[in-house]
Image (cartoon, rainbow, N blue to C red):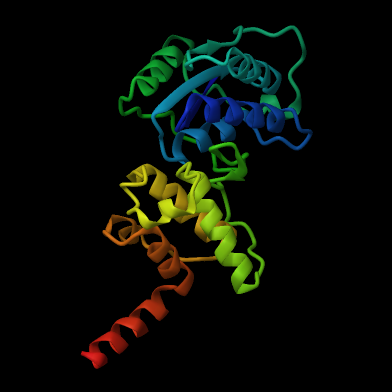
Length: 242
């Protein structure tokens, strides 16, 4: 039996995340359930809207996730039956029990309530569907090895990075890019998502400190696109001009 924790910024995004994960678990090449549990528990930043499901097989997990997604309510605990009527497949027998039956709900409930949880040891990180943001089809955190990035024309990259920020922060007007990151609704956990997404999708190195400043978003985006080396050169030129 494993505990699969999910979190997102909003219930709607949690619903989408549950649907995507359910589909991934039904794929023929789905990773072992123990590795899925380990990845969800240790490989993602935790957001405010939380839920979890428990399962012993991929099919149980997928069904529980679909049930969670179909409620369209504030997330609640979804537990699958402890037994199943089908013979487990090889990938299911490869997934060890990640928590005793008596503690699985306690772990999930404590985590859902915002407490620090010590998850069972073991497992490895694997690729899973990315988290959705504000109805966007792009994820904000890719697990496992970084994705291969492709070179984009400068204008295309700037547009894509700007769209990433606007979608993640649910901004509807480009005028909002004149706001600071936190004024626009950002927080530290979302900054972690953006840093990871910028690295994995665009190959851009964005220090987390960039998000803590008072510069408007459009300037922050410009700094991200320039990169740290260009920022250092710009600072030197500014000093020479003084």
